[in-house]
Amino acid sequence: MSRIPFFSAVGIALALAGCNKHTADEANEAAAQNSQAPVVMPPAIKESHVYRCQDKTIIYVDFLADNLTANLHYGSIEAPTVRLIAPEAGKPFADGDYSLAGDGKTITLTKKGGSAQTCKA
Image 1 (cartoon, helix red, strand yellow):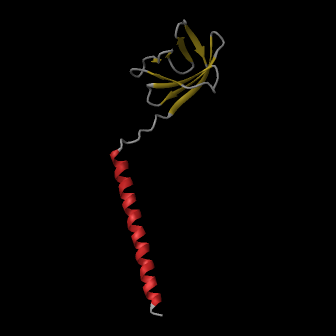
Image 2 (tube, one colour):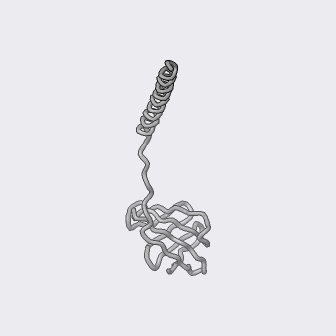
Image 3 (cartoon, helix red, strand yellow):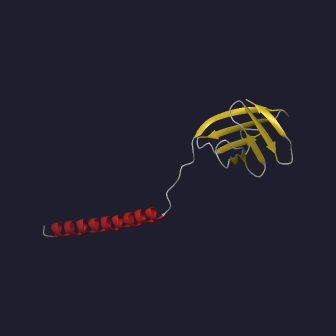
């Protein structure tokens, strides 16, 4: 009977030793997370429109809440997203291949090497 308390004490000591290691790992992980730059969420979608352009192309545009970013899907909603950025609110959104002016029901889209065309929602 004297062995039962001994083994119980050893079991408790091992369990506590494991807890200390786990707590140390959590502390190290927390310190590593605090040293990283904070995660910045992208702006929410303010409004989305489907447009038909003068050349009969369908485009999908999401205007984001920061008023500086628009996501363009050219030709299909499954087409890769092209992120267009305006230098300041109210200016045209652009990247290397596209320029988009306006928002709401009517926009003007210019594709690299092409002419500007009006697109309506």
